[in-house]
Amino acid sequence: MKKLTLMLSLLFFTAMGAFAQIEDPVTWSYAAKKVSATEAIVYLKASMEKGWHIYSQNVKPGGPIKTSVKFEPSAAYTKVGKTIEPKPITKFEDVFGMDVSYFENDVIFQQRVKLAKGSAVVKGTVEFMVCNDRKCLPPNEVSFSVQVK
View (cartoon, helix red, strand yellow):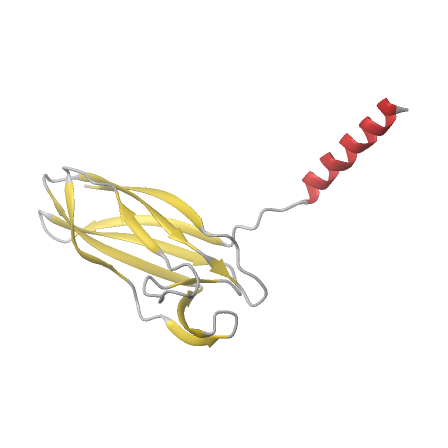
C-alpha cells in the first residue's frame, strides 16, 4: 500500500510539473555599432509580449524594481556617459501609489563605449521587473555579451 501511495504521489507531482509553465514574457537581444574608430554604441533591446511592460531606469524609490544595466569592468573598453533610454510612458499606478515610467512592446537601451583597441567584447547584466495588469513577476537578471568589431 505504501508503494502504491508513493507511486501515485510521484505520478501526480510529475504530471503537475508538466502542466506548470514558467512565464518569460521578455526577450532580450543585443547588438553593437561602431560610430568611429575608437567608439561604439551597444544596444540592449527588450521585446515584451502583449500586455506586459518593464520599468524605466529612473523609477523613484518606493515603486517597482527599475531596470538597471551593469557593465563588467574591462581594459578593452570604458563607458562614455550613462545608459540612455527613449521617453517612457508615465502613469499613476495604484499598487505603488505613485507615478511610474515604463515601456511596452519594445525598448532599446543604448550605451556609448570607448574602445581601447579596434574591437572588444562588452559584457554585463540587465536587471528588470516585468508586470502586466494583473501581476508582476519577480525581478530577473540576464547576462549579455556583445562583440564590437
